[in-house]
Length: 291
Length: 326
Image (cartoon, chains in turn blue, red):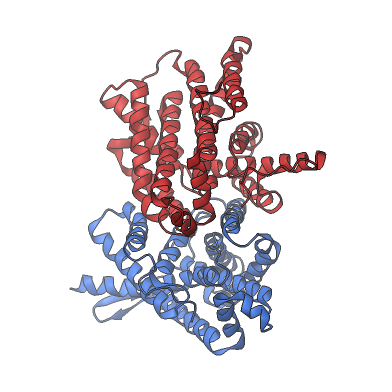
């Protein structure tokens, strides 16, 4: 019974990270109809940024969060302005954007490899090993912090999208870019902004992930896939849908460890993805556009 | 000429392919350098694999980032049946191809059925998951120490001509998949799945067929590779860089064109051998930069460049990219 409680707590805490990770991917896909394959690359970049700031400057990862997110936001805007914007929209643009952003990801991976070698790195803080007791279970303080930060990020995002002018503009562009041009919303700027936001979320998730798991330059590939699973499960952009989907994925993964060998857990998310696609192609909660 | 060729085959193309095969088959008479001989053999496998990738990525617009999964499955199945059952080589290749094709259907059928990028995203997971599972599956792949096939003297040299046949078949299939009435159906599916369905094209069946063909061809390439090196191990066969190399061959040569990926494969193999092999720590970045540059400036790769030159030289001829441009 205690074991069960442990696993449930672990799943819930993991779900926060997954939701943050997935929301960035879903946001860009919902507004630009582009799957940002560089999402994995930015998750990796966020992890290394946190690690570098901590080892070189002694900056606490949670303090670095804002810095890293803002930097990633501008990286995202640059990526959009310099690269993504030049692609045609529609079917041809779909394939091209996949290939282009995949190329950017490869470049980032190589850069990380050259700068920091291919070895696994871990981010160790003074509180990495602290734990507090919840009932009979000991829970890592860091995991709780990651969960808390993720929840705050999601709430801020939800408020941004539903309560502010920019947020409403983003949702409007997601629904119909042509009408937005007619009423004077600067669609191109909204695209750039959305791409920046999605990229910032990826880096933030990478930073949070780095405090929990070891990482190397290929970190982010599995995370990209998990994000995609959550987006498909939860529908686009709905914060509640994303949260529930992240919880489902985290629960399935955590409990899978009980029944299958550890090396197979990488395939769990994928099997879940295929199952969902076959059973409910529109996602568990139908396709809703941002909000 | 007429009568024994289907009406959609240009006699010129058929003769050209045959002539190229004959010339290449005679090359070893004049060329005694074993290094060049082996490099050419590997180029033929590269051509077949790049074309097979293009059937999905180009003709259907479903880019795969994990084709090494089928390559590896084909290679290991072929090696396994040769080792355990003593099957003759060609039969083993066939088994490898069938298993690889079937495997591609298992994960590809559900993801291809859906519109959008589901398939491409899934391939990222498939490549990685297959590699992991096969690395731990000792009985099948020998684990990380791999499998060794018994060496047969002269086989490596002979495989050159098998390679020519393999590449020629892949080229013929590429031609047929584009020019035949079925090719037109594929084009319709790529442009608009719904509209294609409305005019009586069955997207699911055709997509599955192309997927199977692509997977099976990858399987043969993997089996070929296993026989060629007579030693294979999962880390290499299922390697991520392998999957990207086919993406790159297709992109360099021209996605969705008939011959482009073959050209891309030739260039890629030689560039890799001479340049990238000397900078192993830079290959990912080089691949990435190439991808970005080609997609930004010439999305149809070398074929697009060629068409552009032709258009400039002869503006009176209205040359189009063989419907490869959407």
